[in-house]
Image 1 (tube, protein in one colour):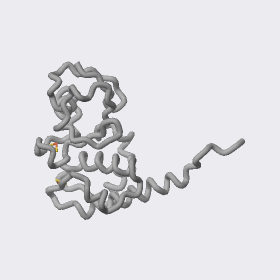
Image 2 (image 1 turned 90 degrees about the vertical axis):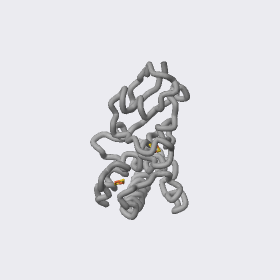
Image 3 (image 1 turned 90 degrees about the horizontal axis):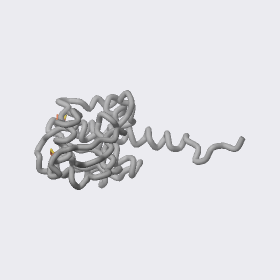
Length: 162
Ligand code: FES
Ligand code: FES
């Protein structure tokens, strides 16, 4: 049995500890937004956020995840309102859509850690798009970065004195 929190919900998976997280999410939790692509860690379609880091869920055995906090595309935001999701729509990134949940999760984790990522950090994303949407994905990253940076500037660091 593996206990973890998925999209804010405490869960116990009674599965073989070698079961990849991808299949626990898709088959046991019906969270099918996380995609099954290459199965060998190369494409990034299965990316979710685990304890704040983007991880390829096809490569993570459940037994290594006791107590972890997992976020999938379904839990990223209410009403698809995360800045990366909004930028995705604004830049009309979508083609077949298969790579997109993984890309969005990887970018959300990147921007959380580095709100203004360098081109080198962006190039280091392991995700791949077979439809050739990379130029629009790059624009979406820049747009989301700008939105998140602007929101951080507007937010006061400490509450004003009353
Ligand atoms: S399915 Fe996991 S990296 Fe491709
Ligand atoms: S939109 Fe089709 S694989 Fe990326």
